Amino acid sequence: SQQGEEDPQALSIQEGENATMNCSYKTSINNLQWYRQNSGRGLVHLILIRSNEREKHSGRLRVTLDTSKKSSSLLITASRAADTASYFCATVGAQKLVFGQGTRLTINP
Amino acid sequence: DVKVTQSSRYLVKRTGEKVFLECVQDMDHENMFWYRQDPGLGLRLIYFSYDVKMKEKGDIPEGYSVSREKKERFSLILESASTNQTSMYLCAARGGLSNEQFFGPGTRLTVL
Image (cartoon, rainbow over all chains, first blue to last red):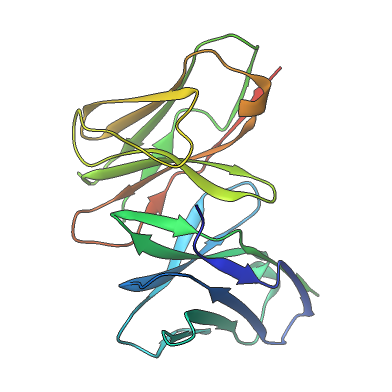
C-alpha cells in the first residue's frame, strides 16, 4: 500500500525557473523524506523533515510540511538541467519507508 | 557514506530459471530492503530484513524469497522466474537509528 502521493506526475519547466512538487499522505507520520532518482539509477536521499518541523532548507531545496493537511511540498529554486530526475516522497511506517509514485521533473535548457 | 552495491546492472533470464540478485552494503547497517519499481506503480517493497537470518514480507512477496546469512549481504531469489517479474529491482540499507535509506544502483531484470 502506498501512502505518499506526489502531484503533479510530470512537470516540465525552463532552466532557471522554480519547480514545486507536492506530496500528500494518509496517516500520522514521524517524518517525511524526499528522494531523487536519475533515470535508470537508484534513489538518493535529499532531505528529511520531522513532524514537528514546518520548513527545512538545504541548498536550493526547500521543504514544507503541513501535518494538519497531511501534505508536504518540495521547492527547487533556480533549476538546472542536472535537476532533471524523478522525485519521490516517503513516509515512515512500521520500520519501513512507503514511497509515492513520484514526480517526473524535466528541466529544459 | 554507505555504499550499496548490486551484483548486476542488467540481467536477462528465461522463464522458469532460478534467479539470484545480490546486494552488499559496507557500513554495518542492520536493515536491508528489496524493492521493485515499475512504471505507474512506483516502488513496492518485496522483503526486508532487520538483522542476520531475519526477514519480513513486504507488500508483494509472492514469487520471491530472500536470504541474509551475513549482515552485509541480502539476496533476493526468484524461485522460478516469470515474465511478470521483469522489472527494476532496487536494494537499500538503513542504520538502526537513522531514517535515511541508501540505495544501490538497481538491477534491470528482463525475463523472456
